[in-house]
Length: 257
Image 1 (cartoon, rainbow, N blue to C red):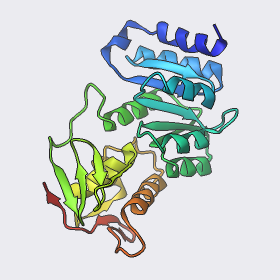
Image 2: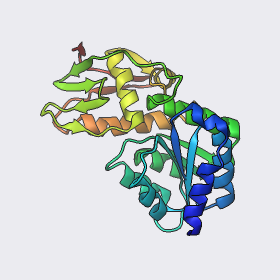
Image 3: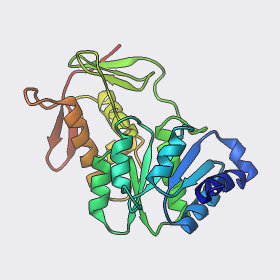
């Protein structure tokens, strides 16, 4: 059995009995074998199923066989970087992605968020913070067993766009479904639930059930920038207005369908 396959198999089979408490399956992509196995062991002890791989090739191989609920992706990998892999994943998948970055490297964090990552975690990190972020991402993806469900059923319409909360889908005025990451969907839902109201960054973090706040306010700005690119064209007025020194406001009138 190849080393990579043995690594993944051993990590799955060595899980604690607590792993039966949840269906969430986490994929760790990191070429540091010791770190990968330590993180996998810890998360299994918290009740999650975990598979570990070393690089993008192994990641793509396992993604052909298994659907994962969360991907923990290191930025520095042999071959394609974690940033490159994140960008490729976002073309076809909305699976939550947590990037592992070098401590204090803000550039990687910003670029990762712009490429579709939902959260970042600088190395070295504590297991307590890792678990808090994992739980937050899984709650946002509506797969945590303790999830507080969003409003049941229904959809929101604004400027002939429709956000369907049952399917977690956004359709443009032509009926074309626009791909949104988990973070983008939750951010947009927070806006349509509070239209024409100024929301601070802190309120957006709370209302969107966003990642654990760390004081890195630019994460909100990056999410807003990504949403704007998907919602607005050059000949359209801004749907998301920046309120200088305060936060943001969703301008359109919103109707509940």
